[in-house]
Image 1 (cartoon, rainbow, N blue to C red):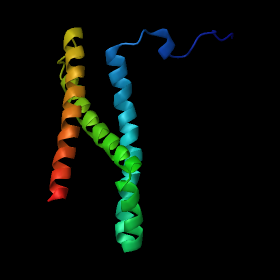
Image 2: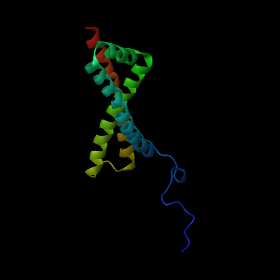
Image 3: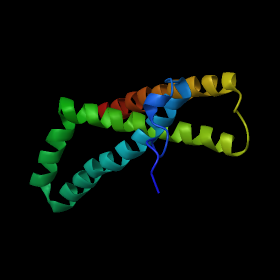
Image 4: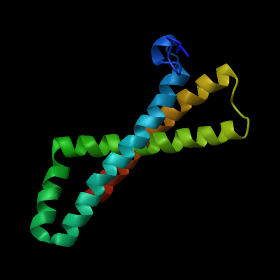
Length: 130
């Protein structure tokens, strides 16, 4: 039996990029990012349990520009994944499938995620400042 010379499933190159496609891929990517970013949290907790020297070295990394950038990205991924998950729950109920609504809800997910990220960092810094 001869096999067909075609892909088994559609590839990204077949489709024209769309807003909803980008948001769907971003949802998956933020899920992976949350899993990987949680390793930073585990490292921080393990260092806290190990003693002051280990905790200080992890705190030094987390307090650095790279560490803060990673935490900021992790915070955005957390809020994006949460907001887009709520959007998906609406879709599970049959709501928001109209093209205009899908675009608007996608923009809302990005806007609310950015606002929650910035707000949580402002609150976090103001609480840390005392």
